[in-house]
Image (tube, rainbow, N blue to C red; front, side):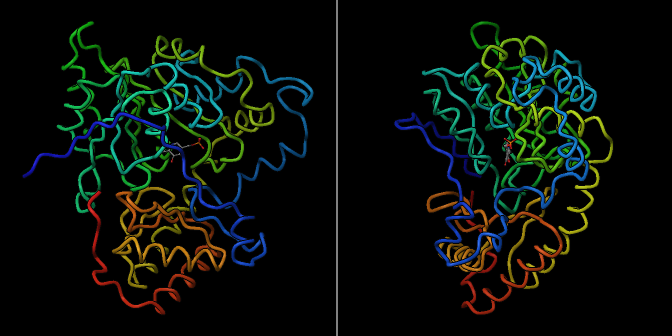
Length: 391
Ligand SMILES: Cc1ncc(COP(=O)(O)O)c(C=O)c1O
């Protein structure tokens, strides 16, 4: 077996996050009404939790809208700590997980340092690393046929020259968690390689944006690996991407190092109120996950029946292989001109031949299924419908 490619890239200009077109842009480009457009590209939920309507209608927020939110977000921190089963000094609040990733970069990365990124994965790890002037060490995941799991030996080796290791489980955009025990033993191996000041333990980030969709969390590993930061969000299982609330969970010493980089008041008092109440009530994430778990197999089966290669997923999105970047582009365009926005990956990306599709509400998924079946039926069959680009 040939060794896994491990490449160093010194940034010239930092990478940027590539958004899909906005609803307004799609509407303008294809002559559609804005209210016809459905977003299958953002791994969000069709509706916020029911209780949010009541909270907003009551109009009583953590502080009056004329005031800043409490500087310590104390009630939100307490609600999150209770929900995740951690102490309040093990938590840091951010405007979404994205702001947490940014704070990790600001705290732990500097020019001349390096961070390990495992493509294909969430693109912000590269963006944050390069924005700090640090180098990315790419360690490719294993191929699609292995479920894109991480290559533990290669990650361990790369971690020896890194200040930060960015992990993501379940991984976006591939949809699966690492197999049982892999993260625990990887952390143990990385810790064993550390050698005091000569080779300090790197910060290991485990982004658990989709953790509620599986039964396991890395939170329990923070005592075994003191430099672990677990990232959580209200955007996915809680259906609250619009309120922008995320958390870092780590040992108090790590939280204390990150805290100076937390912008004051980046989470609005409305968001603080909604997040605190939602985290304090049982069953919100559970109900949303139940919708996804009911819809996902139906969507997967229908897309497969249409002749598409759909990969297993435990999350609220699925990855669909189209065999070539050209065909993925054609199908994406066919969907967009009918008002359905998929996630594309662009030329040169290891997933250029794929689209990622969010599992939405039943009627929206039906519209997606009918549209994609129509597009696929009308197009010439792919030369190799099972063809998968190696990541
Ligand atoms: C793996 C991962 N991390 C972080 C984020 C950003 O989450 P947030 O909305 O909390 O900023 C996303 C959003 O898609 C994600 O998929």
